[in-house]
Length: 291
Image 1: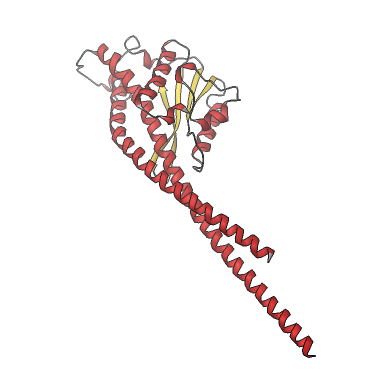
Image 2: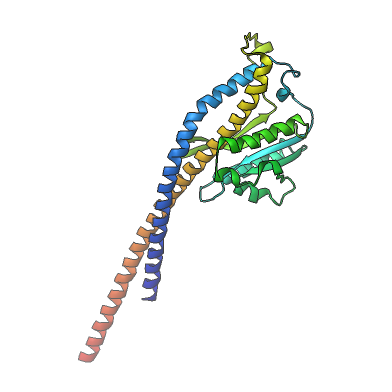
């Protein structure tokens, strides 16, 4: 009977876990809808502006657009974008693995610093030699506690100021691009310097009439585009997080249901065996008395 009690306690525990994972799945689904709506509204605008920025950069020389300066220096910032919370499958681990690959391969010989956006990336790199927490961008977990364009703009502006001051030669962003609720793609996107569109400008014979002047566009459009580019990456990561968590909780609920079914079958077999043993003991005792 002790074995039956143990199995029954496990069934009760799994049923409670199923309630929690199912509730978390519904919460993530609601948050995913809001995050996906924000991303769908932003992504076409951000991608078109980024395309225009690439075309514009191809027509400018370094004196007109310092953000496109390709430097030989080896100072690199890697912006690792993760979430503040776990329970979302491989969402965070994929980013951390990708950053470690970059540190050990492409940027192995560079003076590389990792700037974490999200608590999970910060926890992973806070004790490493690559960790860098500048005062200009606040705490790692603050960004996703209140994700707004103004907050992300402060980080983008800090990165632009560092690049213009010569404190960094390249900035890359590693984040999860949202594809659908069950699928995310880890992207490594160069933030600075701006990569010109090689099919346009001097290389492709592009011819543009600028209105207002070219310098006004450079001073206004390029910083704005860079800020939007970073904000889009954060929105992608935010939507991907909720999609990954919803999928993880869905699978956890299904696995718990399978375990519950298996344990219920095991419990019924053990209970039937216990009843059979009791009947055998009663029959054996009655025969002994009759004998």
